Image 1 (spheres, rainbow, N blue to C red):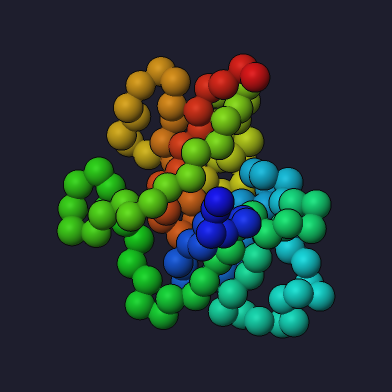
Image 2 (image 1 turned 60 degrees about the vertical axis):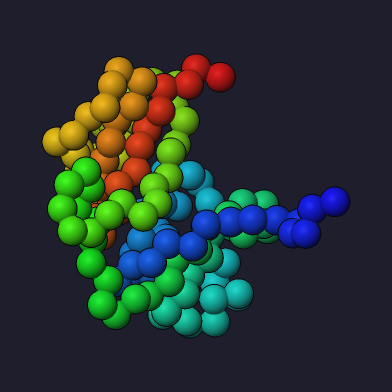
Length: 125
């Protein structure tokens, strides 16, 4: 039997609200202001009332330098899309930056507005 009944990912960042809004546009997840209570240090994203992602303020946050450099990637999110070109167009329009390192035809690597790597993954299903 599992110990936990649910899991979600927490991402360290400088500006939790801004990053939550960015990822909310990618996923369709929403910020529940009644849960947030004006907290500027922690913001959750919900899908149908279930927490899916959270963003936590770290005052000395430094963006990863992936794939090289002194600050490792630490974690990244993959988002499955049916059309990589359309997905790329849409994430660039909301503030993502395409990374110079691109590992293959099935993946596209981007940086979110605070420097975290994330991928779009071609998956037609």
